[in-house]
Image (cartoon, rainbow, N blue to C red; front, side, top):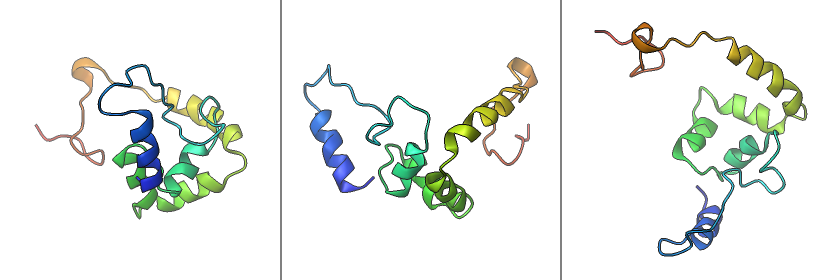
Length: 109
């Protein structure tokens, strides 16, 4: 996380007090309540809140995808169909599925 974002969050969410402070996870101005590419713009600018968010912006496997999504003007048009496609994934539950230790391979029992 860049220092400016960190300082801003520390002021808004102090360690002591500030129990009623509300902060949107999406720190892109005007983007907190809409579906857009603000998240991707933020992580390209090193303003992600979570380490995993920043990691996808710098990892060689995902960096180009993040850059493309950050500069895309049609993110909202692509988001809906992507969510429909994701909804068709058959999630296995209970004894049918497993939580993988590595996303790339099934766990060896």
